[in-house]
Amino acid sequence: MQSAAMGEGESACGALLDAGLMVAGLPLEPELRPRVLMHLETAAAMAALVTAFALPDEAEPAPVYRP
Image (cartoon, helix red, strand yellow):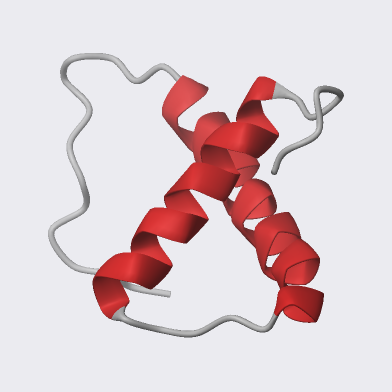
């Protein structure tokens, strides 16, 4: 059961984690759940930063990566 103090993002990540584990048929030890949830929330926060960056319509990916 989730705490009422838990934020919307945390509950959404928890639901995503539960659904992913169920679909994949993977077990998760209860003591590891907070750590996995923390990493999932971090990944979601990083994805939000990337998707928030506006690109002009004429922006295209480079055809070949050259370091």
